[in-house]
Length: 283
Image 1 (cartoon, rainbow, N blue to C red):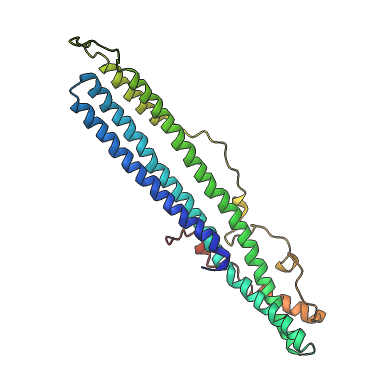
Image 2 (spheres, rainbow, N blue to C red):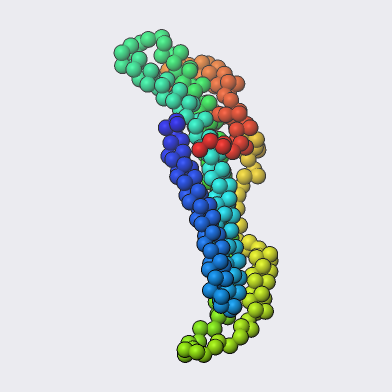
């Protein structure tokens, strides 16, 4: 991994482990819900059997939210991969520019009058121009995709929490239907009469889930103003006006020529445009 993208690469890899854990927790919780239902039936207690069976249904729905949550996290992770890919694509331009700067400094120290300095300075002008484009694209994509990723992430957290709260509240209604009044030896418990109420609880839970809607404060974005090359749709001025270039050894004519060549040679993007939209499948 390029140095620039190492930290995000590590973060994305760690997220993958967390997502797998949520997914596994959901599967295990669903299995436990099924076991609860089986146990209730084995007690041969009509009320306990009915309530535990319906409670198992609600607990399985709660477990299902873990799976949906994991899917939301995976979607967010996919957006972060686009930042990582862009970081990886920008690293070569940084490395190339630094290499030229190092060569210039070395030559200034060893052979300050060398004519090669002019050639290196011209090459540095081109590298600076290309680097300016790449760095601008990097910051544009990073900010946009960061907001998008954590918009998705936090929305998934809120949806999971609100739906699980809804289900847990209905589960508490079910638990309250079980009569736990103590009896003396030989005394029979009153007949179970809460079956209809228990079914109503499940219906209410289903209606609540079906009617759930996200009511999150929107995460605003200016992404619509960004063009296909990760630059503003309408730019004023050229690349050379973004930051001063190092051209101290060049004459005015040489500077103009170098800048013109740099603009012609600077790529429209530090990576294929399709890469910006592609969500890498690799970890």
